[in-house]
Image 1 (tube, one colour):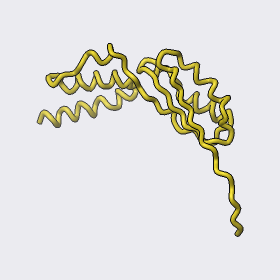
Image 2 (cartoon, rainbow, N blue to C red):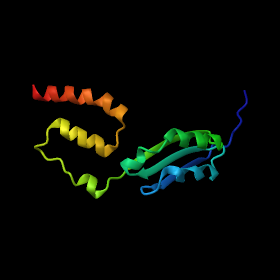
Image 3 (cartoon, rainbow, N blue to C red):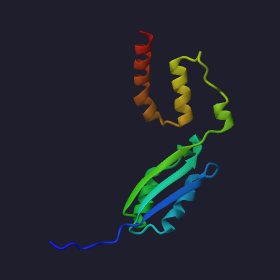
Image 4 (spheres, rainbow, N blue to C red):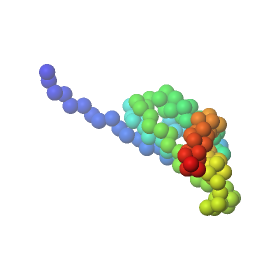
Amino acid sequence: WEWRSSDPRPFVDIDLTDFVTDMPEGWQGVGDQCVRGAVVRVRYTATPEVARTIDNNAIRRALLAAGAVKVKGPEANIVHTVTESSDAISEDTDILTGWAAYADLQGLDPAQRERLDPKVVRSREEVLR
């Protein structure tokens, strides 16, 4: 056995910040960055509405096709507008209404909601016992 040193893989961070107001086509130019042979981390900021339209798998596929070795993410930072948070939840709000408002603000897709709703109902029943 012989030890041979190798160069470490480069790490590339890609921050996509134009998703807050623009449509997600802006990510397509990221493959032009220096990603060949690199481990790439992708992050973006978006409103819940825009985040639901972003195809994270398409971003991963594009980076891998551009030569990235591994892609971590995309990690979404969801930002809410003033109008979204102005409908505040008070202490008098019941659990199911609060859950629905929280899920809407987080931009959960219907499949996630369908999976989590029964758990929230069971939790509510436990609390009310």
